[in-house]
Image (cartoon, rainbow, N blue to C red; front, side, top):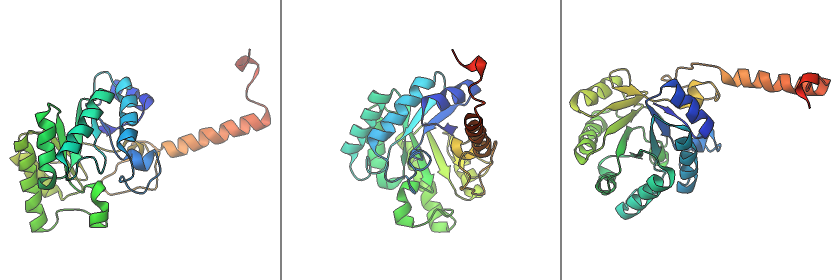
Amino acid sequence: MLTSYDYSMARILDAAGIDVILVGDSAANVMAGYETTVPITLDQMIYHARSVTRGAKRALVVVDMPFGTYQGNPKEAINSAVRIMKETEADAIKIEGGEEIIDSVKRILCAGIPVMGHLGLTPQSIHKYGTYNVRAKETEEAEKLLRDAHLLEEAGCFAIVLEKIPAELATRVASELSIPIIGIGAGGGVDGQVLVAHDMLGITNEFSPRFLRRYASLHDVMTGAFQHYIEDVRNGDFPNSKEQY
């Protein structure tokens, strides 16, 4: 599972054989330059998701419900989820939280919309926690996460993302639940993994958590290509005689 926010990236991911494409609210960070995921709107998420679904022909496309579209108001949650499904033709939505938002999860599921859960570090709650540190290290929070995972499965979620929690706890969740558990910074004892594509490709290079493996260094490649282009234009080397009509 990897993220995508546009048509071209979605086409590449789909052709490469990725199982799940997440239209993440991380678009707020890597596409819009915000420090948190909180500011991105429902309309913006729908725009990104529309672009992705036009490029993905075989991968499952899951769309993050942004902050403020489901917390505390199940009616607003179902309205937001319906908009995403109708206007983007995505396959499912993802929603952060457990017991606190379970009524919204149930309302969305009752409408026939598949839901992926998200527990552990929930970036939309950054102003509550004040940090992106590892979650559920203490017994009380770990036990709550386990309860929430079971609640989400019992409600009907088809999968859960666990973000930045101890590997031992993530392995326990995966062993106790029958639905797929997708990890990001949750160790290798889960059923699948997700990363932000811009991070693993090395397009963004200022973000280097322990769980991130960079599979390319496109920041350097792209910078070099841009500088080469600038040099060729300034020197009159581009376009040459074969590159004009």
